[in-house]
View 1 (cartoon, protein in one colour):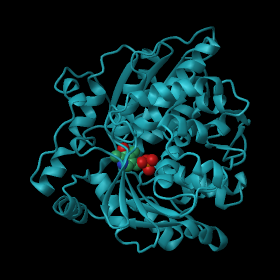
View 2: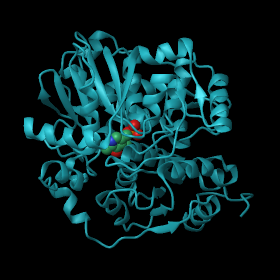
View 3: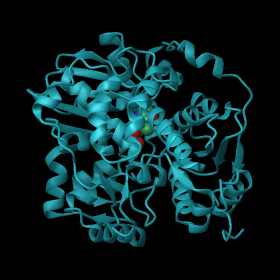
View 4: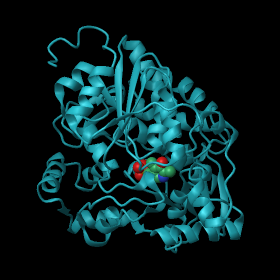
Length: 473
Ligand SMILES: *Cc1c(COP(=O)(O)O)cnc(C)c1O
């Protein structure tokens, strides 16, 4: 399987190349050249498999002809052994026809673990195989950074630099990141928003000399491997509720559009999905584009669901590539329009295609809070604010298919919001306790490209070989 850039200029790569590159060199995102299909029999055969086995069936076609394929089975087994539920991603019914898909049983209590535990291992093995080293750079609104640091800490082949918006992540999220004392882990608190952090990371990648001298790679959901690992639970959940014989619907608390794009990929692979509901908080640029055809990100608003405080959803570019008939020129044009005018317009067939499978709802802060309270009163389930945004959005849909809401974080990750809504403090899982209340280590930097680039240059270990030659200062 080969991977092509949404912007059409970067060379096509095999899976391992896309995994190690993160962002494509032309600023685009890597996409599989074709969508592998699972027929009804293959989907039905996923029923009853271990999660790691099901993951292998779904993911392996994307690694066809790739050196990483030989690692995949062992990587998946190791990765999901770190989860604290034998089903890895269990379903819990919350109403007639409605389920939560619990994606928070990994080491950092958010769904990011499901992919990051896999991606870190695949990367480390690929680097070891090639005798090289890499510098992972990522922006986080809280959960990606925690999951990445947990997955990469102590790995020899990788240095990790995580940028988070200072003061805009929860206390638990921050401490999950800053209490990692391993020498290969570096936290940077940026004076700015998540969108600022993401823009800095993109700028680092477009600095060719820096990118090449430090072998920069990314583990944000701009990395295809993240999306790939997230496709799996759409299959396992749907099969548990009757797929391929009956279609299901999903509601996905959405920030950077990575998780829900994995649902779209599942549907392209043949999983019968009746509807994908995009649930956003007050940062509603995605909800607005569905309503009006105009994508116009505004300033980021801080909410009780900080991991979704994103206006400029990177992975939306992947969907634009698909609905535009995979014409890189169209994507490049839209991105140029966005840069020049702060917006772009979709119309006609493109908009129809968006609306064919997706709907989008924005959920306010009060509604989020009463949803947490209502769900607790009705079912005894404590939902974190991100999950509650999903539940509230799902309730606006009436559809005959079973509705599966992705529960993206454990309530104990956002205890203040849960307590405010319900009067209950969610119990902190055992595995989190030893990590909190320790010493913290973090650099504080302005929202300034030079400051961040200089910090990374000063702290990244030299890559193997003489790649640094000619890199400038
Ligand atoms: C990252 C995150 C999201 C948003 O996922 P995207 O892939 O960025 O759309 C939602 N909820 C939680 C808890 C998250 O950590």
